[in-house]
Image (cartoon, rainbow, N blue to C red; front, side, top):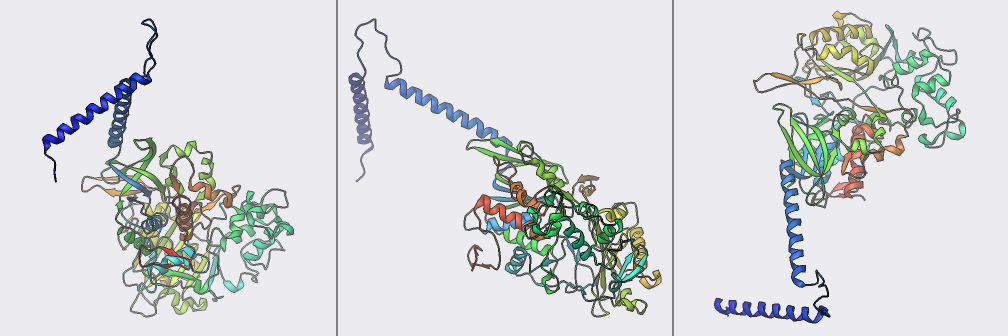
Length: 612
């Protein structure tokens, strides 16, 4: 039965009166009496003074909270728990794993500078070329099932159709073109006409045998069973102090042995003098052998990142901002503690916005990292680790030919080319052949290189003044002058004429460089340049013990929740596995998410990983 309102008020009045009377009686009993009127009265003993002081303190704290909240509200356009900078392999993988964790991680935002997902996974479907043959991969174009368990597991979990990466390892007749001389692979170690001036002890050796010879001369026999980063050289200092060029020179190789070694590798990283211990351990490379272990995703390698992103966006707290460049990360003290303010600009409008986060994951390249203003770079004693890697420049040129293509012509049948790779000291460096099985489809050829050879193509490909050869609309369609030079080089590499090479039907190209802006059209209001660095891959510098520092780089400043992930500072540089590796380690260290090791299977609820 409810009580009448008048009776309720009467009861409240009685209760308050009793409380006041009791408090007054307690004060009179507890408080000491003054012996006389001249004795000073103690301040602060009265309940009234205590109550007033408490109320005043509470009011001041509330005012300070409101001031801080107002400051926080004025700083933050949006608030999230985790902000991920970069929608490449490391960024999308991190977002996907956080979204599928058994623990709810609140709002997660991906911030990406371009308007596409994938970063350095960049696949283009070429017209009239069957995707089951290949797609034009401007970024990563394969993975290794034997030595890269994280990528293998993710591809399987996502259900992405994959196939063997085609290459003809057993073709000893394929041409190698060095210094304008074409030599079959079988003759590399036997020909007296090899255009390199080698010492007598180097003649007849393969490049791998040359490597073994000089590395063994540098590492004492008793040290060779130790981990690479723990070996001591014959000179008394750690092996990781040396670059590959240092090893060859100190061991007394000829200059051309180094050139031969570099030429048959297909890459220029050795010229960069990369960390010799890293090379020996296979940190730059997939390892695990070739054959059926080398795989590709049929719909394109960027299907990995796109699918990770699509699944992440199904998460209840998922957000994303594309076409947005992060410029600053700053730690600020707020109402409930410290938080991070991420400042960014839209690449088209250049409008400045901010997002406040408890955690920031920087899934970017080394040069991109250095262009983000963050005070943690300077407060950390580990800042020097940021310069522990080289970043490179690379290019890809794809030419589409009607089938049968020139390499299947009668004039070149001596080389028995079908699928696979040939090498050259020319600016073409690596040439990959993808031959269609029927004449109704086009065959595809990829020219690919890095370092000093990329500089040959750099300004040709990005210069907008040249006429463009037909091709899909991507960042840098190939100028006709670059196609003409590519055809000239192909003629030299195959010891034939331009008539035999023929005219390609289509050409597309891309240069991965940290020094070129992307031209962005501003919705009819004019064109302007946005600086967007994008190195293709990284290698460890000599002098850094990468096995000790790669985990330290993940959280450069232990006092701030800013984490660095990606291929650049991994043990699998140049591969998707490296991006997944550092992201997995970060998620385990900071969020308690167990790493993917494979094989693994997905539960029907929330995609939790189980390891049998």
